[in-house]
Image (cartoon, rainbow, N blue to C red; front, side):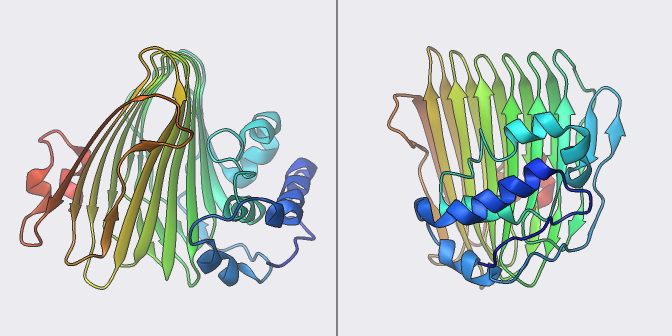
Length: 309
């Protein structure tokens, strides 16, 4: 991979330049990650920022800014949390490469004890290889976020979402992104403090090969992760979904429900598991639909995903 010698964005703060360079220098010391070569081989050239439109800007009951602005305006918060708690850049070579090459993204911050009325809707159109969304929700805050991005690029893409939740926070996160690129890795990772509850509705039906990583670290008692996923594999493409939880604490639990539809063996569904072996209360349910069935008909009546298929 090409060595980083300058900032990716104009007016990029020094801490981010150093963090990018450190990730690039230390990358090979970290463990290898599954399928990483398919991405790393395509990222040999220097980063050239792509085009993006539709980033959200808001300053009121919550804050939303393009990531390129937030790294300056919320410098300390981003320095402490970007690719640290939910998606650790030191966990593997591909994660480190992603951090060093983030070329655009979204920042959303919901302060403590804030209830955001109505969903925050994020629907950018991107020609980026490494978009990154960082969502920080303070203690006791409540918010619903809907993301329906379109990512178009000529190289494999690594699209990451990090959700960091304070004590007792409530987040309902919905995502149905579409990829138009040779291959994509969609990462949706979270860090949850005690008593927090994250509800996820995730859908994917892109006409390309997409690997999805769902993960949360449940840090303390009575934290809960409840995810529903619907995956449809168009002819000629491939999908893989990997749900993993870690954490501890009395009453801490995770629940995963998945509906998958494909012809042949081009859909790989992994069961919900723990990454570190810590004892967690897990409930996993997976349904494979026949090709002639209508996926929307099998989803719960109140599902946000019903009108996406």
